[in-house]
Amino acid sequence: RTVASFAAMASTAKYGALGIQDEDNLQAPPPKGAGAKMLISHTFTKLGSKAWQFAMPIMLLEFAPGSLVAPALWGIITMGASLTLGPTVGSWADKVSSRLVSVTIGCGTQAFTALAAVCILAANSSVNDTDGNGTVDTNDADPLTALEFLSSFRPLFLLMALVGCVEGLASNFAGTAVKRDWVPTVFERYSSDEVLSSMNTQMSRIDLIAEMLGPVIAGFVMAAAPTKVVGFVLIGLGNALSFAPEYFFLRQVYFQCGRLRKPLGGKETVAASAPTTAEAAEPPKGSFGEAWVTWFRHSGGVPVVTVSYALLYFTALSPHGVVLLAFLAGQGVSPAMISLFTASGAAAGVVGVTVFEYAITCAGIRTASFIYVAGEAVAVVIAGFSFSAAVAAADAGGESMGSASMSTLSVFMLAVVVSRVGLYGFDVGVLELQQRQVDEKDRNAVGAVENSMTSAGTLLIMALSMDTTTPESFVHIVWASAVSVCFAAVLFGMYLRLWHEHEHSHPLGTEDSHAHTTQQRRMLVESTGSKHVHMHFAVGTMTHRLTQ
Image (cartoon, rainbow, N blue to C red; front, side):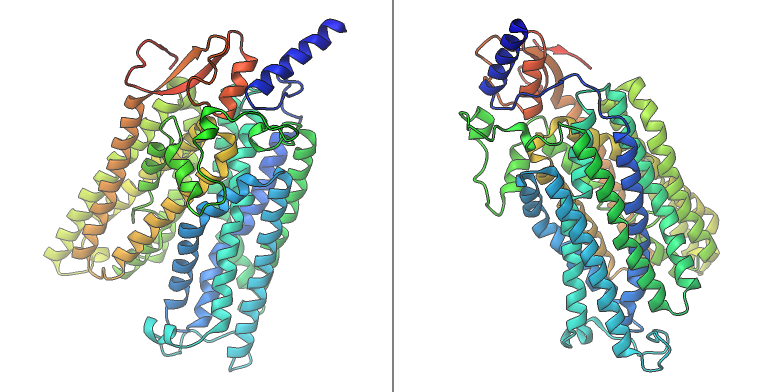
């Protein structure tokens, strides 16, 4: 017992020297059932949110009957809030003292905003229901231009936009935090890499299945309800209630797993230790651009990976993207073909993430991710050539693309569907790379920066598409999208060449010779010989042992 006591004291001293907390049962497995509970909670919220996202644009039409200006403006405002305020909110989420408090804030705020949106839309329907039939007539109304809509004071729409902004920002405290922080905290160091990869792929599969089932559920509810407003109220209530099981299961996991109850970053809360080199270089806390500075300064090539991923969002080549679907419908493609196109894209995503789990075991996470993003690049280039051929055929025949060049257009749509295999597999790969490389005390901030950059890509492609009305002009959007995806693949390939994953050791007293994340500092204590895995810039690292 005396020997054990001295060993425990020595372990605590080693942790304290590195500025992190000692932990009990370092090699203990994750709590029994933790993974299942996290997946169940994720399923509830994703189904609720996808059904909500399907019904929301339909109800937003009632703010400006006969026009798309209300849902378009609402999307621009909410994405703009994510772009400008998301990183700051992500930094705040990293500073919350308890992970459970963070999830409580996120779930509670999102549930409240869902209920508030239901009340606002019900009030708007009540005010504008001229026929007394429980809904606003959006078919016979004179369409409003964007200028006409903006020039009139519409307090209910402004409230709706505010609620949407708050709801989107609150996701940094719940959904984003669970994927980026809870999952690696529970599984990363206490299981094989395959377990962490399996959790990520299962969550991605849930996202895609919810993307397919959510609109079906919402459509059934709205069709079965006596009025459109009643259907929307039921969907909104279901979305709000879905956060209850999420919180219930995550709360159980929190109290079962002692590692989740440690302060973020494992920092000592009783006695502050001397800052390490990495901590001394951190930006001032509380500054508006703190998350961006943290992201930009992060080691291991994290900024390069983030930019390569964000470039994939500057694209109109998405089977569920509003821009492409609206264009295809305007070119005479049948609703049945468009529905099949959308469903096939989600199904291809499920295939992609499922196969990616096995690709990791064969090629490693980094190489498998590159294969997937390179495959996506090849698919979108094929889509670009097919679309150009379809435009030429339509011009020669003097008809719409849906009539004159449906066979070539089908090749284009098939190539876009195949590209989803690469996208969703790469999405899982980037998530896992960031789970491993991003310092656990900065995961929410870096994740919020990534969300901000992807929102910027989506907004930019929507802005470029606003004046695109003909196939001859839309072909430029298609090729701009293909170039963006190809550049993302090239950039990720540069990351593989410039940053190498090595295992090395530090002689006693030299642990602070270069920057370490919290996970790496902890690994120095756990391993024999103060070893840890580190991402090094390629220049000057050839003497290290390459582990991949």
